[in-house]
Amino acid sequence: MEMKIYPSILAADFSKLGEEIKNVENNIEGIHLDIMDGLFVPNISFGTPIIKSVRNITEKYLDAHLMIIDPDRYIEDYAKMGVNGITVHYEAVTHLHRTISKIKDMGCDAGVSLNPHTPVFLLEEILPFVDRILIMSVNPGFTGQKFIPETLNKIKKLKNMIDEKGVNVAIEVDGGVGLKNIRDLYNSGATEFVVGAGVFHQENPSEAAKKLKEVGLG
Ligand code: DX5
Ligand code: ZN
Image (cartoon, rainbow, N blue to C red; front, side, top):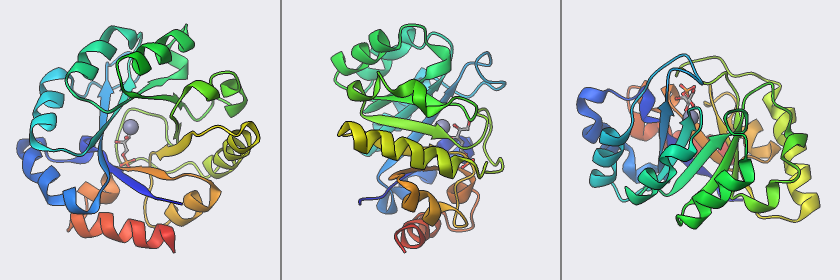
């Protein structure tokens, strides 16, 4: 199976964001954009202006993770700015099927994210409509938190659901991902890895991204 590394710029130095992105580009598949509203999660990150700047300096896949209440309000704007994938939280949306359809209609990959407490069985009816499920392995809001080990079982359960249904849905994992757990996560069924501190807080972020893939693939 293919493995994709998406560094989260939440962990980058915003005073030199362009440089930070250019520096890792060779060893990654995309950039993860953590968009937070200070309501759904206890932190405010960034929105439109930063997304635009990032789109302007890289051709890489842009993976937007919307940690915001009522994300429907921004889908059209972000899609028009050239974001490639839009993931919303199961816990932040009332009419998930409508939201997912809106993302697909705008030509983007559609994802649903689950907080650590939200069980995967709730995804049963939406699975055929999405491109990815983003499993949070920390409580969203901040970079550099400790990985919740129970996530491994959750990913295995989800992988079984996906295989049983015969649908084409990628499993992405986000939060506390690093050299210590990437191999187990990959073996459990995840193929897309969001990494913040594990890339941008390392001495050589580009080498760190490369190493993650080597260790993950084993
Ligand atoms: C957490 C964000 C993550 C975070 C990952 O709310 O969704 O994308 O930036 O950072 P690390 O890898 O440092 O946990
Ligand atoms: Zn994220």
